Image (cartoon, rainbow, N blue to C red):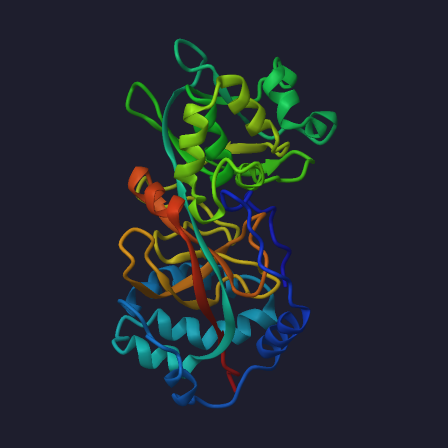
Length: 354
């Protein structure tokens, strides 16, 4: 398979699911060996299948198909029939299509978190309230060895790496966690920033630090809870907590992306709100449909949905570990920040084209 580009940082508190080499091997073998003819009974045992509006999975699936078909020849051959049928404008029975062209591989129970694309007000030059820089990726060398504390102390000053300036260091920190965002400028323009890379320091989740010190109970942990704590802590203490995560994220301008499109995921396609999932590609191939069974964190209603694996994250590890892209802006952030739900996951792998 083609190499995976650098991952965005990951979910806001970095919880990891356990590794399972045997399960990884089973999934890889399933992908390589394919399967026999269709067997609807395989899907009959999946509670809630095919979930809400299964037809909504076609658009993101076709974006992934464009990448899969242009890549490795063996992978393209395995996906060709499924992608061709997904692109057929006469396709009506989406459930039937999925059951004919794919076979389900259960991944068991795991953890579902959420992420989003923040939108912040900012400027292209420093001034007034806008004093917190967002940086481009430095060239290979000593600047990438600087940790967060050194960069915030001015370690990158004078290098011409500033892409934009925002007002709140906490907003900038969470933009780093999400890995992409929109900066709304005073003249109405919107600067899209995508993930470009990171420094050479490990990601440490500040949520874990707050749990360890008893500041926030584990069961109450959320992005909103972290923000609330940072908002009431003395400025020096809040800054010190942020610097406990030495990892620092660098961005790149995204200039050729439609305003309505989501950010670009690891697979190289725009993400679809509620239908794009960040996964561990050691267990789930990028581009594969995934059926998730969880709960909406806002109202507690069942969440039964087909999504597509299109992204990765530095904290997304394990066979049934997913990070659901929730969209852009405050409403998406409210859902993503609270999402930390048990999830059942089933990956759909293309059947043997023969």
